[in-house]
Length: 110
Length: 116
Image 1 (cartoon, each protein chain N blue to C red):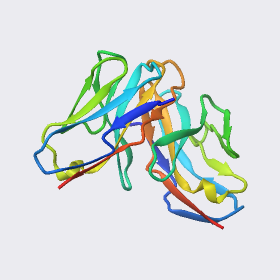
Image 2: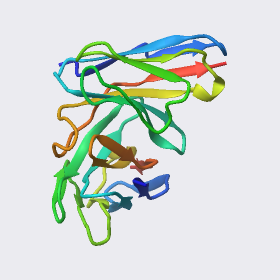
Image 3: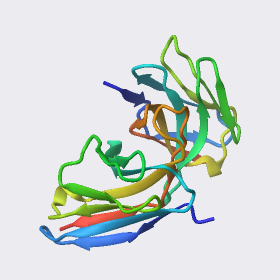
């Protein structure tokens, strides 16, 4: 069935380090792909999205490219900040259903 | 600019008690969802409503009921709470109907439920 697998956490990085969080998906058809971010005590909010193969979603310095051949949508950021500390969820949408990964907790230390 | 509003934010219940989580959105969205979030399990869909007047089971519907009261409101009811239902519950909504491209989910702030 449809699912999302993302990198286990927690991840701890120093400020200005490079970030990669891996995400792969299993889906029927051609899903749309998302990264959501959850800050402490809040609901999830959309970080970026891509709707078709080879699309690159980007926002706030984060990027992810829809790779159909590897069924992946890895999240990257070139230089993380303390304010990026949060939990990151990869998700895909097929039809009217959304499938989420288990989340990756990121802590950035000064 | 309210978006998705959930109430209550916190609730403690005893086993066997009932309660209803309320959710309302002011964005004229068609679809609404209830998820639960548990450590190490991510978000799991309980029920969703693709449009006013319809509801469907998600991945973990047992022990829950829902009502799509109107286009704005989607409530989640626990008829007889169990400790396994201790969780953080999120309501979400999206604009488009099924199959209409990339919906974007807008989430509420969450409701933390503890069942003793």
